Image (cartoon, one colour):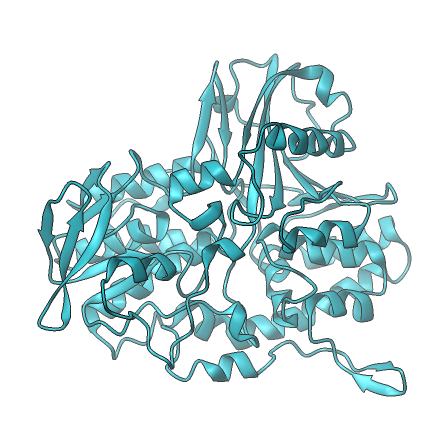
Length: 497
C-alpha cells in the first residue's frame, strides 16, 4: 500500500482482518496524511480537520476490525453549538448541533422573520438530494456508467422566474441567491462549500448535501484533537498486524503479466505484492511507466494543483478561555467577489472567511491560564500562488488574525507566538501537488466526481481523498471500506448494506 493516509489505513485494517498480509510504505515519517498535530511549549494544535462529521463511518471500521469499539479508543464529544457565524454586517448566530428545529429558530431570531423558515425548507430539499446520492456517491464503488451521476441534478431546486423565463438553480450560489434570498443565508450556505475547497459559483446545486450532513448527523470533536483519531486507526492497524515502513518513497509500480505486481522504492529496493493500493490517481500516472491507469471511459484524474489549499495559523494565547466560548466560529468575508477570487490564479482574498477553532481541551494547552486557537482559511494552492515568497505567509496570516478578532476581541494582544502553515507544508506532508486539499465528490457535474478506486491495470487500486468518493474524513473512511471490499470480494462488490 502506498501512503499511510486515513483512507489507506482504513483499507489496510479491513484487508488485514480479511486475511491479507499488508505492508504500508509511507514517504513521510508518520501516519495520518493531512491529519496532523503541531506541538510546542505545551500547546497542541490540529493542523488538518478540526471537527468530525459522520462518526458512524469510523465506528463501523472499529466494529469490523476488532472487539474494541471506537469509543474505547478515543473520546468523542458532541460540539454544541455546532458553529457560530459572524456575518459581514456584524450579525451573529449560534447554530445548535444536530437540531433542524433549533437551527431554524436561531436563524429566525437572529436574521429576522422568514429567514429560519427558508433555511429549514432548504434543508428539506437538501435531504432529498442526500437520499438520492448517498449510496452511489459514498457507499458504492463508482458506477461504470458514472456519467448518469454527472448528468442528473439530484437537488430539487425551486422554480425561479428570471427575465421572463422560469429557471431552477443549477449551482450552489444560485441556490443561495434565488431560494434563500438573504446575503447572510447565502454566505452561510457558501461557507460549507468554501470549507471543502469548492467554488460556490461553479459547484452543482447538489453541494447542498454538505451543510445537510452537519445539521443531520451532528458535529463531533475528538478529545485530545482529531489527530487522536489517526492514532487510534494506526494502532488498530498495528493490532491487526499491518506493517508500516516510514521514510519509504514509492517511485514505481511493478507489472508482471499485465497486472500490478509490487512497488519500487526510491532506494532501489523492490517489494513484490499480489495487489497494490495507491494514493492519488494524478500521481499514480507517474508511477506506471508507459501505461495509462485510466481508460477513456473513466473519470479523468485532474491535476491536484488546480484545487485550493489551506492556510492554518496556530495561536498560543495567554489568558484563559472564556467559559462560554464557542468551539468553532466562522467569520464571514465582507465581499463574496473578493473571496471567490481565490479560485483564480495568483491571488489571495484581501479579507477571507476564517474558521476559528477554540477547543476546550486541557490536553492542548499547558495550563488553565493559556489557550490554543486555530485559524483556517481556504486559499489558492501552491501551484497557483507562491506561498514560499518572502513575507507571503505572514502577510496573509495577519489578515486572518484581523478577521478573527471579530470573534475573539484582543486576539493579537493575547498572542504569545504563532505558527503559520501553508500549502507548502501540506505538500511536504501529503505529497499533494501544490499542497491542494481534495474536495468531496458531488453529483451532477463530471468535474465534481473523482476517479474510480479501480484502475485499468488489474491488481492496482486507489484509495483516499483524490479518488472516489473524494476528500474529507468521512469520505476517507468510506474510500477505505470500498477498496477493501473490491479487493476481497472482487468486481461484484456493490458496497456496504
